[in-house]
Length: 344
Image 1 (tube, rainbow, N blue to C red):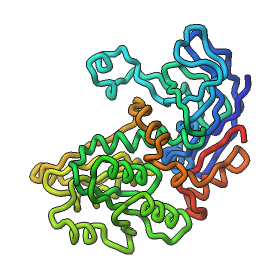
Image 2: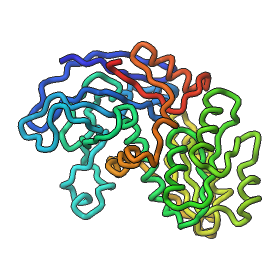
Image 3: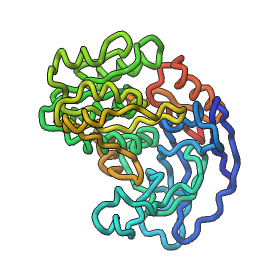
Image 4: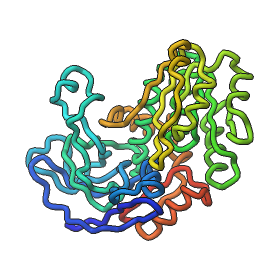
């Protein structure tokens, strides 16, 4: 069968390409993509990426269409989440109880999740029930936020600051509360455009105790006036330059987890190693490969502990994909999370 999909690079150069999806081999599954969210990485690609066109989309909820003869876990009609990078299960790290370090992963084989159909290996699939495809497409990004929060080892009743109010930051703040934080603050750009206004308002609805508008308020002043010794944990979902705020507000012995990327040259920061050593600060990066915590993430959505309706504000198709990406970048629409529906 033929499948249309989105590819992109810098300057909002987005292409719709048609490729042939072959019949599944013995270990592969053909899925019909029902919903695929836009990730910050996709936005980085169409804003800053200068090399070859990148396949767009990896936050996928789909329906199984056809299965290979050796596929043991799914059948046509099943609802599934597609993991974009799946641990192999047989390497030394996987077999030593450290699958997060697997480097022999199964992946999407260059296919865009923002497409009509995909051919993926069967162990890349997680079945789900009880929620619709649009809400289920939050499973992958929610798992990223969940993993970052778990990496932060938040003490019960602890204090947390999340830098960046994008979907991952908002979900990190919500999970931090679920995980026992007594105080959660979030920072963002001033609410001077529809996008930022929507995101900061969502932060309040999701239970953040303090919302800081960077530029109008000093992150350091606002936090240290409440916590003179600094906060227990900082979770950085915003670009790397915001790490400076994290260094200024973390307490002695605190942990900073971070996953904010930048592909436009602003990924390099200065780090005072002496300060990190003397203050015993732990820096803990979170990289969502291979996929981990998907079943727990999906359960949080299914049970309403994370409300997808508070986060997913827009859906779109092939015809208005460029418009939606542009609006996310320039802030002209109140978009928190946008989800593509390839079949309408």
